[in-house]
Image 1 (cartoon, rainbow, N blue to C red):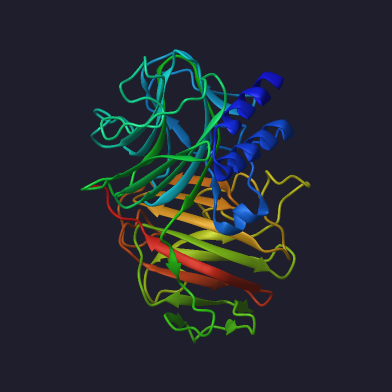
Image 2: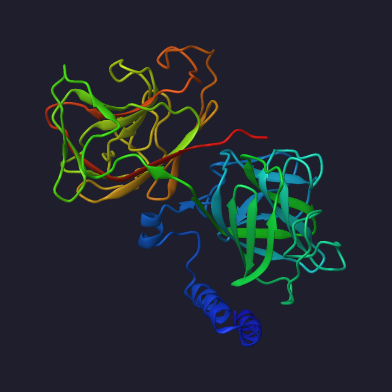
Length: 401
């Protein structure tokens, strides 16, 4: 630990004040032993953990490699050249990732990648991790695109911070801007991939914030939404600009339709284990006829890994949430990714659902796979319903080019 501390101090001394502050934060984080967690401010800002520090939930290996979780990090030493990639595709985002590489390692973090890209300049963007003697594109470079460099020693933890908006990429390394590059015909979406190529590699603190989301609720009225008036629910805008759902059954439905999208919203359940949900790719005008991301913070036997009634973030009647991170009478944040047949949900930045609809195509999502765009529905479930929503925002995910 002391060797790590003094190495970081050496890097710290050579940087500007703003860069030094970033490295100082890394020192404090390392000494306090805090990894693979989000702060309350990060959760509120929409950050998501891609790695929970304990399992490979939400990841898939595309090669025969010894990927494993050890001491709070994803590690690989032996096996084929290939990727461990997310099961969810992302378009515009901020990405943070710590990495540690042996001096003889050649590895990388792949952005908007396919599971098995043909080479580093087709079907992906590779952010390299390698010394100058291992690659003409050393750490800080986009392989085959633009060269960068980094002078601190290997075999210690370093941090990449990536901002990807359309074709614009900005790369920070340990607080310094090391590369800015623009793609002329950018890939619309893709997976995040961790590469094993040559030598041992480790990753931790992998977190992502989706960018470009637009407001779905203006905080003033129900413009853009339609109330199913034949039902019992009430939909109100509070003095503080929140959307309140009372009683039920009933639904509030967007006028617009969405196919592949990312949606984030804050939710407050004012009761004990109340039942509601967010429906999506819904058949316009039909009552609660879509995929349902459940809202139900109850769990059994005092164990958050035993959700009641599929649990908040579960896909109702399809896949239970693997745990219940949210509490009633506390604001929590839900993020839904829907792309193609794949659906993933995060609650308070923790991924709870990773489900692919493998049923036959059908325009009715109750019967089969619906890929046709549909409405977003907020559900009033029953007479006990009392929920509030705020900071609702959404963005359609561009197709992959």
